[in-house]
Each structure stands twice: as C-alpha cells, then as structure tokens.
Image 1 (cartoon, rainbow, N blue to C red):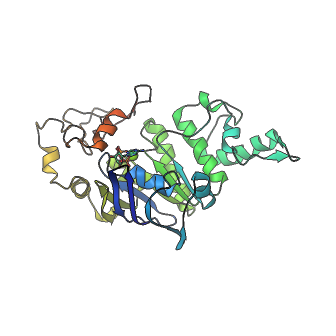
Image 2: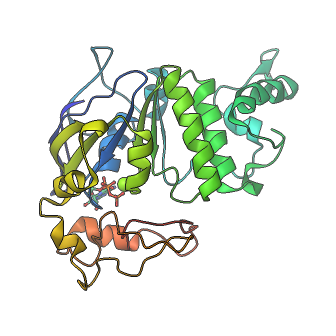
Image 3: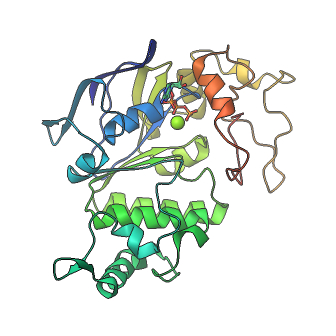
Length: 297
Ligand SMILES: Nc1ncnc2c1ncn2[C@@H]1O[C@H](COP(=O)(O)OP(=O)(O)OP(=O)(O)O)[C@@H](O)[C@H]1O
Ligand SMILES: [Mg+2]
C-alpha cells in the first residue's frame, strides 16, 4: 500500500501511509487508539473503497470494489466484530456465497459438511460443522472465519485484534495456527494491543501515529520502549512514571504479577475523535477481554 490517504467527512484519518507485507510474514500495525490501524486494514480488505493512494499485490496495482473483490484477489479481513451469521451452521457460514451445489440449484449439504470438516480439522476445531455458529464460543467462531478464508485460498489474512476476546488458551492456539499459515506462505497482518503478543509472533511492526506513518521496523531490532516511544511520540518515562494517574499501576495479570501497561492512552491523550470513539465503542454486551493489558477505555 502506498501513500494511502483517507478522510471521514472533514476528519483526516490517514495521511499518506505506506504499508507492505511479504508472503509468509507476520506483520503488526501498531499505534495508539485511533491511530488509523483498522482504517488502513479496512482499505486493504475492500471495506473502505473511497481512499487515495495505491494498493498492489505482487507488484500489480489493484483497486477493490468490495470485500468479495478483495477476497478474489486473495485478501481476507477478520475483524473485531466477527462477520458470521449466527443462525446458520458452521458449514453454511464457511461456504456462504460459494455454496457447493447439486445440480444447478440445491445446496449439497453433505458435501459442504465434508468440505467444511477438511478446512476445520487442521485448525483443531472439534465441534461438528452442522452446529449453529451462534452457539459457539468467540474463539471457535474465529476459527470458522479462518476456515472460511482458507476455503477461499486467501494469500493475505488480516486479523484485527483477534485475541482481544479470547482466553489465554484460545489465544495461544490461534497464534499457533497463525504461525503455521505464515509458514505455508500466507502473509499475515496482525493487529493487537498486547505488546508481548507482538514480540512473540510478529516479524515486523509498522507504527502509525495520528494517521501518519512513523516507521516500519523488524521486531528483532526493536524494544518495547522503542515501540512505545514511536507510538506516543513522547518519552516512555511519561507513561511509566510511578504515581502518574492512568499509568496502569496496580493492574495485575491473572497470575498476580504486576504488568506495566502497553500504552495507557485513555486518560492521557487530549480528546480527539479517536479517543472519543475508542471510549464509547465497546458496548457492554461485547465480551470483555480475558486478559487486557493495554489501557483501553
Ligand atoms: N466509519 C468511521 N466514520 C468516522 N470516523 C471513523 C470511522 N472509522 C474510524 N474513524 C475515525 O478514524 C480514526 C482512526 O480510527 P481507527 O479505528 O482506524 O483506529 P485504530 O488505530 O484502529 O484504533 P483502535 O486501536 O482503537 O482500534 C479515529 O479517529 C476514528 O474515530
Ligand atoms: Mg482498530
């Protein structure tokens, strides 16, 4: 992606961002709430169509006309709000829009169940593909979305905070799957507010701040402090100064170890459309993260 610019009305949200992901790479866009990560990836996934700048796949320029079109070009996005039909079965969801048919009209349910099982099995999905998606846990629903992407032979898989609503075990399982897919050559874009996850899984990080590109760095050549500095544009001391309100003091992990916040932005940044939206976006009915280490409101 090159020189991507995007506004919502008069609000400029992306100010000329470059982003590249290689085949087989796990690449993490990072930045404070409202920095523009999701917007950039929604452009990559064919959700936001109205933008400036160029997108190329294998060096060839493309212009998406929607998510289906992006999928045809091998790009799939799985976002925070999953995109499945709760009242349909796992198999029906996987093949929604690309149904396996018998004759010219009837959906071949048996073949669909079998084919779904073939995509689900390597993901360690243990539930029957005939199960209704609405009865599955979030972690399982995510695996259904991944199976759906795999059934479409995607080459670039974008995951926007996939582990934010998962248990520790589910998150680890998902990461193993993501590593395996990358090993098979799929390019993975992985957004997470959990810094430790980035260091475990990603090879490169691209930092955005207020819609502008700060830089792309290999994870092996950076530190937590560097990334925080890049994201905040301020010195890390400001964030970790003891006694500072909002510095995340006292936030503990499940095992009781004190864990400094990745970035505590909610009470520190000046009010901006981003922070307002970030603080109001998670309705109370949405599952809360099991282990939440960033300082999101
Ligand atoms: N559909 C929209 N309409 C208007 N403004 C939007 C829309 N989507 C995003 N924005 C604004 O664009 C900016 C970037 O938002 P975006 O969701 O891309 O940030 P983000 O980096 O993904 O943040 P977060 O870490 O909170 O997910 C924010 O100021 C946000 O309020
Ligand atoms: Mg986002």
